Image (cartoon, rainbow, N blue to C red; front, side, top):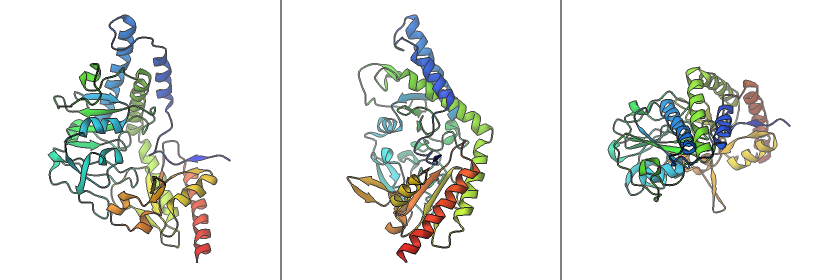
Length: 347
């Protein structure tokens, strides 16, 4: 059975450019903090990747601090700051902020005090894209980076989080991007790596892969790749809309990521759909998560005013540059058939 991967918001397949850069970096023997020739070669690889990430993000002149991922970057940026956020933020951000910013039924957030607030650029579950206010303290740009035209330097944000594996880089590397001169207190201490803000020998191979993936993602974006993906996503939604039972396309009608569809099918649990679609050869994600063995409805969808039945019935389908129209139409046919079968069984 040929499988179809429709979970790019969870992680994107490794780009060939990233793989090549990582293999080359693995042959470098030096520590990037060493001053000899071998060390300088490793340092050059790290600094090339730093420049690549900054250019792809429109963050030239800002500080790019490499971390083990966006989760660590969030901790580095947010620990002890007591900022405001919304209930739709990723767990890595929500762990550090008060979730008191209002969310409307379309998933859009109102920010009253940008200098004391955080706001994600795009939601991983619904794809809803936010309008970032001037003077925002931090934005989680992880999902939008590489998929949306954006420039950190023009965003009005003081800090941003990004992650490599969401745009085709390796897992386990990300970055905190800050306006130069921003005060950041190191959470990992010891050495003076990453401008004294994140101690520990840099993961040279992963960083090289991040830089190469960011550069390739920027080329794709400029070349219109995501416009084609959006057309395929819209065709998927048109097919799903033929369902005669109550089906909700969450966030439809507002600005969303070009690759993301959130489908709620009340009465049909999201995790059940994920398992059934997995057995049929399709990888998707549920809009609910398991925590301590208990399945809970998505807090993102609940924050948008959806009840537990609807929120617990949601799945996310997220496409990538290699996804074909045939992939999504076959998925839609399979999903609709299983939806009809489920509805007939519970009727």
